[in-house]
Length: 339
Image (cartoon, rainbow, N blue to C red; front, side, top):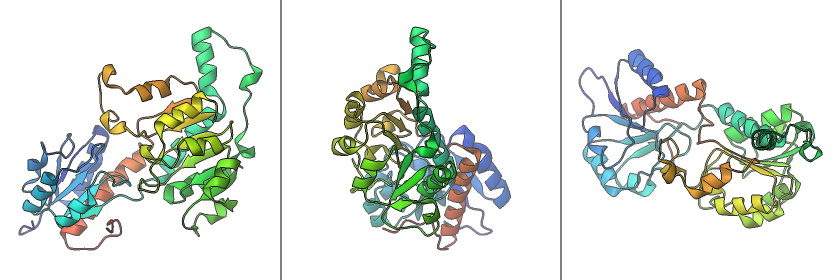
């Protein structure tokens, strides 16, 4: 709803302390009002939207209740903006039905996520968790021959999904001397120089020492990695998931690790993470699969925090707010999701 003189009123849901300075900076710079709400957008918080021009969210829970979309339309809201690249929290059919545009922050810092993936991979490749377990549990500080590790430059790394994040990942591994292969729907002119070969998934499974996932969650990528894929991987291979939890079947992954079908896994996302990631929960509410995974010395789990660098957080907040302001003014933007 535009007003004379025009100061926009925008509302941000799911705001974390780390985002506050950048939201305030944007408000001061643009002369617009930004209301910060800690809670996520739900049926319990939807009425806070009334009187505002645009909405930015950071959600771990789904926005799938029809009542939310109906009220957004009643309040005159024309868009929903997520401060992330992923937008699977929205019900696109309900958004379309109620005349809502959806925007994301498709590029906030590919490098941040690529570096976290590398961090997981190096931790696992150099067997740090296994050394730590022996030192802490058994006071065993020996240089055991069974923990001799490989160096990254003689590894084959498969990038599954060569978008901005996958491309940044390819750049890093190539700079470290690894052989980089990629599984992708479209060959990127920008990132092709960092890829030694474009292959199909079956070839990647058989050849890769490290497989790192950077695909969106779609009907075709859900459970993309499950028992059949793990059985095709090398026994010494490492799986890194910096994409979406549902891309990997968690139960099948646990079984593959227990059966030594693969050597390790680095996970920044899990299929059931929305119930506890980004929250302080009771130990009793932590899922059994998470407990089982983190108890393994050859597994690294982080709570969907690969994006958490100062560069990324600033961009997530300010790109989201800029896009909302542009849509309120009737402009077209490149980050609009077409559906």
